[in-house]
Image (cartoon, rainbow, N blue to C red; front, top):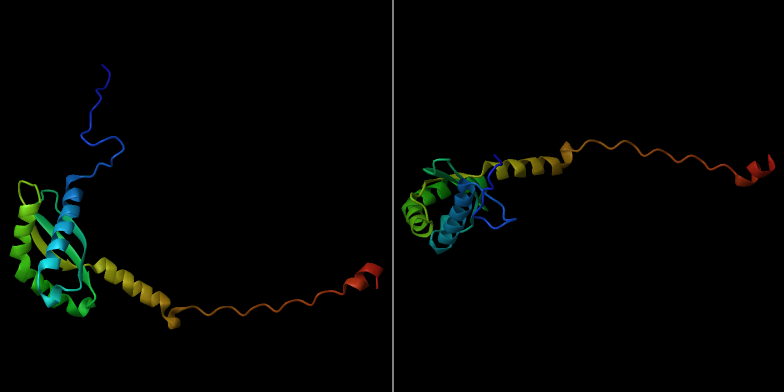
Length: 149
């Protein structure tokens, strides 16, 4: 018996994403929009960098970065905790899902690690010494070779 053709609900050529990836992207957009509406100085310069939703879609870890850097992380996490209910209800209103994941907020360590690596690479004391330039060899006299002199 020949295999059945399975029809996709997505148009041909459209990429197929797992549900968790689609939900992560939707959550990122909704939370970022809601952050603009929240009047809290601690959250002014915060960017949502990534969201990981567990396979059961019960929990979502929201990763963020800010201009305050590591020094501002504690205040930002506290501000997120204070506004979590508002963010959670906004997600519930805007996301079409049977249940909305519980939000947890963490600083994005991947970006911080990349910044540390870049600082190390750019630091002058970590660069190896360049070997000395070789001295150019003197060019032979062209007239002497031509006449055998």
